[in-house]
Amino acid sequence: MLSWRGYGLLGILLPILCMAVMALVLGDISHPASAGVFWGLLLASCPLLWVLGRRLNGDAEPGDEPHRFMGLALHKVPLLYLGLFVLYLLGKALQ
Image (cartoon, rainbow, N blue to C red; front, side, top):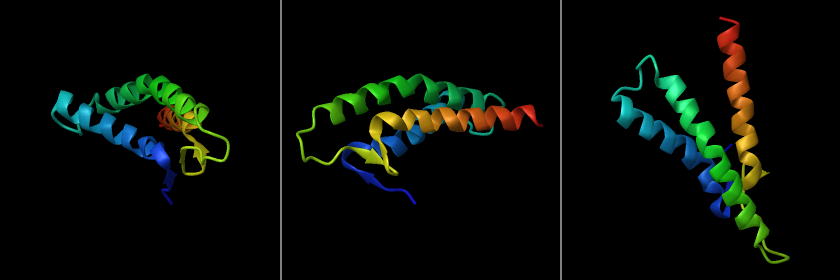
């Protein structure tokens, strides 16, 4: 179930934005290079999400709710994407 608190929505908007940029650049989602471009964009934007999450959650006052996506603090969401990338690579290796 998708859930977020505060700016945690960025956790799901980032992959959607990467997919949109990939479609604009390649012109077609079924292009042979689409997976590489998508993962490249997503992994390149992970440090941005980490820095943004650290800044937003670090500036919170005591008692404020942290920015979260699916129960994870916003700065930990890139770890989820790195794990999904490793699973993608394992799937490609087993083909």
